[in-house]
Length: 234
Image 1 (cartoon, one colour):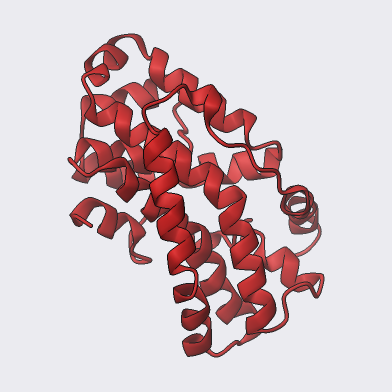
Image 2 (cartoon, one colour):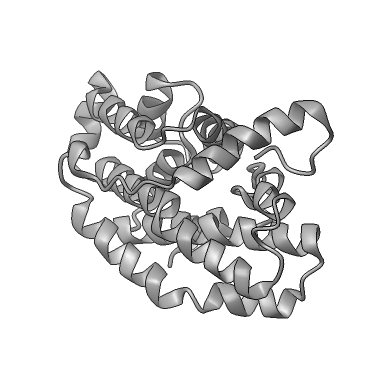
């Protein structure tokens, strides 16, 4: 792993990730996650669904940012528009789409300062609030790292964010929570390999595993957030 993907996966990166729980707050509120065992099950399910969608999109963005198509895309925006639309279509929950774009927008200032590129400009030209996985993919690819690194970074963030939220919300033992995250290592590596294999293909062929419960909880969280103070925005 080179520096870009390391920095982007660091909890200290100023991208606003600390205000997103990836659905964990709602799951905890409903009693679906109460201990380390149920947290591990939640994280595994999230990695296999929403995490898989995001990681494969990030890998595709990294491939486009690094390849010869980047120059063409910087002029036309066609490749980036297709990726943006593909990720939108694979994120049926409006609340989850908003969370993705909110975090992408929050990360944009730091990303532009550290890793400016024509590919990044092309992505932002398509949508001024880019999806977070696509933003990560652009940075990693333009920095010279392979698509697998982008997928690994985004896949890790899909589980590390909720894991950190579980410590804050449920008071779980941080050592046990960290162990639960590390236990997903083989699945994360398999996901990175799958994403890398799909990265150069048609965005329409990216995987689209459904997670109806996560979608419903995301919508419910937005409703509850309006009614009473919640610790996390999503």
